[in-house]
Image 1 (cartoon, rainbow, N blue to C red):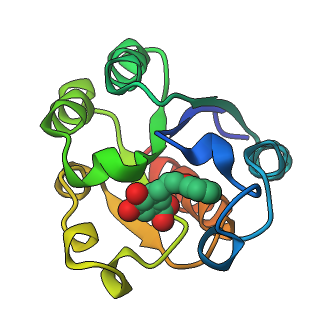
Image 2: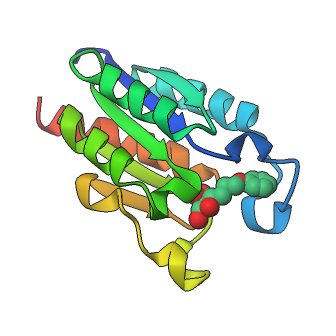
Length: 150
Ligand code: CA2
């Protein structure tokens, strides 16, 4: 059996509103539902997940920095900071950890400004457009990526 992997899952600004507004874009499941789904997937994948949400860019940057050396990888939905934050990009690159970017909606099928991601170039991949199931897909992809390189 492989080493039990420890994955940090970060959600950015306004994602605490999931399930409460804009269900036509983001669906009806709450962030608590998403986190429960991830914990279940983590049991099946023999890994652990630590799920956190913040509306504050600096807090997200701090959590990413603190992940270095103590986590095996990151899953990140940086919300609107995706499109603006060089600080988050630098933090991900600085950890050297593999990161998977998740978006609930298909950011390429929405407004022009959402097509640009500051963070995707420093991630191993991006999953978008599959609703909140994208988080579980990201966990599978990240664990598979890590195990194939162990
Ligand atoms: O599709 C995604 O996951 C996004 O990261 C969500 C962000 C948006 O700014 C990105 O362009 C794409 C918005 C998160 C706000 O989430 C809400 C959820 C429910 C109700 C209102 C906002």
